[in-house]
Length: 453
Ligand SMILES: Nc1ncnc2c1ncn2[C@@H]1O[C@H](COP(=O)(O)OP(=O)(O)OP(=O)(O)O)[C@@H](O)[C@H]1O
Ligand SMILES: [Mg+2]
Image (cartoon, rainbow, N blue to C red; front, top):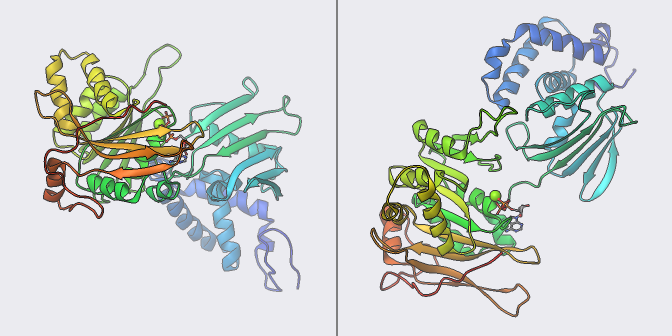
């Protein structure tokens, strides 16, 4: 019996793929056959996962048709490699999908290192030559409309998470002659998005608050997440989004797509900067307006920072309840004034009172986050908006974090939930979760703490 490298099994005396050529020849041959067989146009319309599935099917059929005899394992491996190299990111694909890998470093086609749990390890390279590596590099950077070639031999790009990349990544490429080892690629994979479970584990939110916020999301209340730079707004938005029931149609609108929603029926929209001639920009506002024509059940806006505030408030007031957004502000009150100011600044000539009414009618709950100097992130306040039309904003505190001892520790304090909010929850099938009581009056409107970042 003879075993040999490559598809890697002891094939035994049975005549097999040996006669059909070496591994590389097989891969090349089937890549070519696959391209002849599939309709690329049709393929482009499929989701990445479906595309793979379709190619795998066609390929399995081709392998039988060509009469290449392979064991099941060899055949699976051949199919995977051909599909990887035809549509995906080739040999990088399994590494990108591996949650334990935090960094991938390629120093020329034959040397790959990965970092796992802070340790570097060299792994066998699946690239057979620099050309193949270059093709993969090309595929990576072209997804963000970048180019890397002799005229621009260095590229640094941020890749959003998508069906192909489970996590976002930052990619740096340096080509020869600047890189003496051959094409050199450094890929830093961003940590997977944190969910509510993680936030609970880190103590960034307490259990009763997490339960209440989840109920608010399910009950289609409009929630604004507020906080300073890097306070965890996007992370909280993502965690809250996970409570949107799976049967709803969600449209997300972001500057750089960061949200990773698990719901299948999610449409993700991302803005586009102007081109070199200063044309073609698509703003958050354009996308929010367009999203209204896409029959969304919910609209999730990554960050409101302009005139889209008005469109979003109107959407929240007209059948797209349960929408979520973040805004950059240092207190729950600031968050409301900021929304008001941004909405008023939009080009539509609306009296200020009317804008205030929009905010009063739209916003149900404001969640305030804070990044402490030591880097910990916390939900420091949750308020319910209790003011009505024609009134100044009034917020009722539902929860606040009370620091103790000055070393960042403290406790989460629950307040009775305003009647209006409790009623709305109940009417929508969400009784107050464990740990909460209903206020006798509208709620505790005393004192909003300004949290500065
Ligand atoms: N509760 C948390 N505990 C620990 N790390 C967190 C927490 N929330 C967010 N992070 C981390 O903090 C960083 C910033 O988080 P995030 O992007 O959510 O903040 P942001 O407020 O949206 O920032 P920006 O102002 O840039 O939009 C990320 O690396 C994220 O993983
Ligand atoms: Mg953000």
